[in-house]
Image 1 (cartoon, helix red, strand yellow):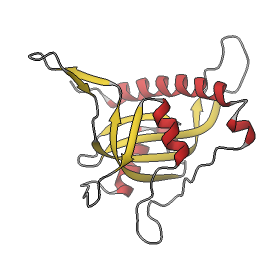
Image 2 (spheres, helix red, strand yellow; image 1 turned 30 degrees about the vertical axis):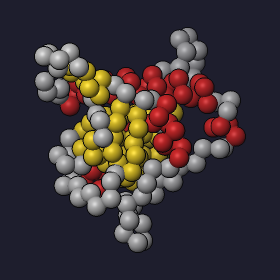
Image 3 (spheres, helix red, strand yellow; image 1 turned 180 degrees about the horizontal axis):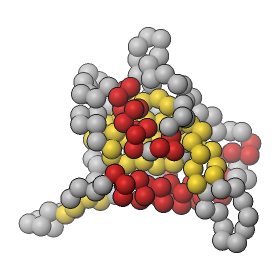
Image 4 (cartoon, one colour; image 1 turned 135 degrees about the vertical axis):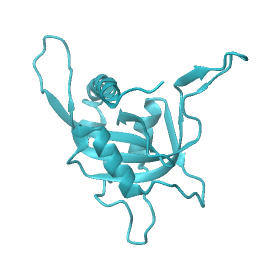
Length: 178
């Protein structure tokens, strides 16, 4: 079943806003107020040596709290889609990230979300299990903030966003705030 980009964006926007509201509320008195969270978020994808950056510890912790594991891709992996193309594809999927600094890390993506089951065996597999993907990390994205009902607050907050793009096809896989 194909889901339109508009519907994916609507679902992603609602999910991002809810997750961000929860995370901001939990972290407000903790690490964020102490300035403990730091994001590398370089604007270029490759380091001077030409190596692709890896995900920061903070980003990995944020992903794991959402049930996502993004391990470094196996050595000698040759993705069809390059890091610059992955960043452009991610920007196209998530207009909120249009101007935010970004970098891409090649990862093996596994989620705790489940996909469709096998009708014959009844087995249900993870939606993504060791899928080769680019984790495109955006820093300083203005995300809609839902907040508490009836309590005035900001309409948008700045935060991190990770968009996963299939490294073979360039397809949008998922996005999550960190």
